[in-house]
Image 1 (spheres, rainbow, N blue to C red):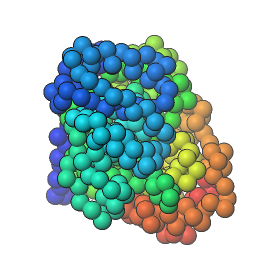
Image 2: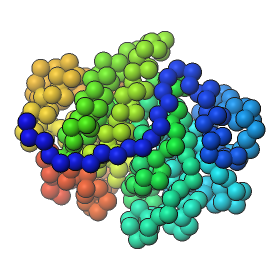
Image 3: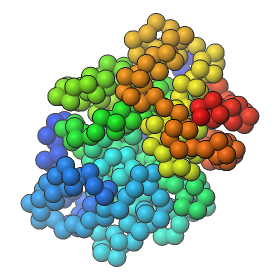
Image 4: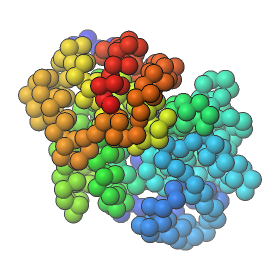
Length: 379
């Protein structure tokens, strides 16, 4: 077997297991006495997690401030506002508590607290960053894997460009992954984030940059999600299934750190940047269409994905994915998610402006006209 040269670096401290949330206060204490808690407007309050975490921090003698304004598909302005609060109040660390949007925004806040100005200037390489506040992440959804990588996806308020800040300074000092925290998710959220995690693993495995170490994690993530996502979806009491998909989600974040994402994410970001649709649902609309057109470019890899998901060969993969989406009540179209036909030309142009690296990372590289056709078919 011919092995290509590669580099692999991921200095993240993963603390995994049921009940591990109890160590949050002790972990935060390692990095400062005053912490900014970053979360959303509702779910961690309704579940009681925010109150629990505040008590854990207080038990360690830590001061904390709350920034609870993070929205789905977080905006650059939100991250900049949170960073200003962190600076003005002398926060020494950032604690991200929530799903993928929360973790991405927490990373961006930690970065922007030490790097003033427009954060998209750093995303586009106009400025070079100088580090970030220490960051502790506590995921409450098993989807983005943001706890295991250096990416933070944001949307530019004005242009609607949706793109990742990529900087090793925003890798968490510690990520506390407690499957018990995931089990308050509504079923429709579990379906969406679970499919996102599967896409991370599939896209990293298909990536032109996939290295041997990454391949191990990616294939295991595909297998574990294939065997456990529906189990958790159909039986919330199945703690083993929840633990499995929580771990596989982290694998997904780790593998895209090295290998990147491919065409499904590259084409989805313009849609959710423009219309603020749920990321996993956008992937559900686009991935089967893209894979149907991609299989001849890498039949062996698509066949392996099909086998890991319980099929026989590459010809079954799209049917397997569509059946999974049916079971998860996630089968949809871009039109059903709020995208309009008049958006297609803008999304096509934006994909090639913002997501070209992801499009070129796919086994089959699509032309602009082919991307336009994919969007139309996914409507």
